[in-house]
Image (cartoon, rainbow, N blue to C red):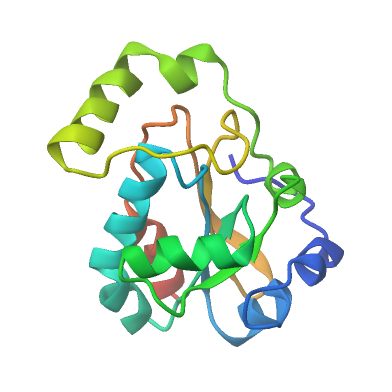
Length: 178
């Protein structure tokens, strides 16, 4: 489901770590907008690792990666650096205002702590080594990914479970057909 009615004002209010609004950034190039769970979440850490591994391929398409997180920029930059995403463009949203504007809701018990999430959490946290850490933001907030091009949302991935793992390259195919 792609949320409709994202107001230009919202995109103007979303100021990136580089000092420009998301609307200005998205006017220059397609944007992969990644709304993260809190940095202590094993699935947030896994997403950072996934994007780090694919960063060159994603950016080679002309796409800019922009993260939205729930902590202050200094803490966020430490996590981005840890995952080899130094100089990442990001937006701080501790009140989850932009999460709500994009239709991202709070998770229920099954979405956050159901059996599938526990199994994937063990795999990502222990087997893959992403671990877990302190909750830095709203632990109930669900993540999501949006592709913005030419002022509109072209594609989205709204997590059904906190453990869902998007295919970032597949999401970007909508921008390569133009």
